[in-house]
Length: 546
Image (tube, rainbow, N blue to C red; front, side):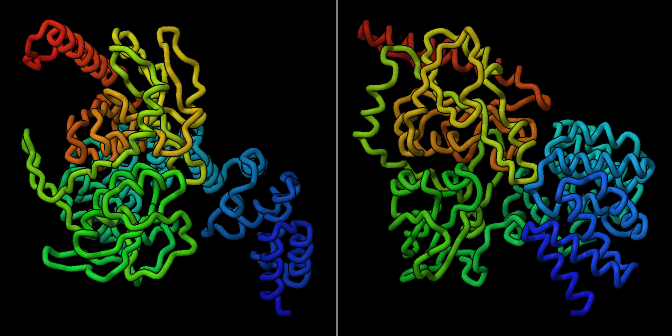
């Protein structure tokens, strides 16, 4: 075999986890081709994979020195196998830094790894030693954004593009920070620069789309938003069968369309409102969703069947990821005046909740005249999704942050929280009824919500489920809110019964919670007043007590 073929075989051994054999094969190539950087790199990676960082570090430091324009080998090791324990990757970086303490590229690679593994604060501290370069400014911007320090992140990205005007990624990230601050014209200009510099990069187009969506310029957003299907983490689909945009007179008669779950549970719940519109155009509609959503999706009007295995799809004419449906129907927001008129947002379909299931849950919930309030205080992190762990931390409030609401009298609080956050310590001021251990799927959750007076939740799937049921929702929204809630709004065009309480400052829930407590107290006083009027045979004027 040629040296290249032997290197390919060594790489396959490394990928297969046969680290000792991979080292032996790579060293055999080195014996014949001593100056082969690929053989040296594979040797170092194999040794590091066995946990022998002291032996691997000098090999990888030498490879880095011999190849100053390549990515640092330590970063390649971190990206090569996500299953490697953090402590092993960290130990390799630390050992290499002791051997090469002034290697700026190594320092930047370590910071990059820390950001990727949700350790932004540690990365930010480390980058203080590398300040003054565009690479360091860019990475500090990423770290600060993950920490919720958006103003500081904006300044770092601005410095990066000032130093290197051709840095497309820094322009795109600058646009995202400007979007968070509501500076949309500047944000779009920054995104335009990024796309002009790297038109082939789908992420820059998606970022521009998200900015247009947040400002309400949806007609400009949808074409760019489809580039998300080209991202590395995108849903693998047959793009030749993608459902095209539908005009006012277009028919889908005789076709079968599969609507695919794409990301979070809430996204599918949000956009299932478009499925009846496909049926109205003549399509037979199948929904392919996770098993947890099967019961709820069967209640969506017009859906012919619900599939739960995307690997084995029945014959179909078109496929449509859920996030593509608004663009398919050319959804637009006509304007954002104080009382906005919406152009083509379809109403949420009222789910046909099984009345027997609803009644069974009604018997289990607290009875009496007190207001029944559902609570969700945290989302669920997705450790496999880069950046999502930090986003989940920003959107999650924690149970203790809801303390102002617990002081409101005349309320029965009912947990709708799932996952590890459900085990958070409860404040002494809170009596919380928790039915969730008995909940099997979203159909059960929907039946519980249908028995509630209001749901108070951070930005999770429960918000959308309550919205579909027409139950009033208090959305506790993070400062860097999702595009679907628009900018500066306290209401939502998607859910008429929603009120948005948004953080006034990043990472600070106090103001939003205080406002929600005032609104909740008004609901209890209205309930009390309405009850008294009814008891005396009078008519309520509908005025909420302040």
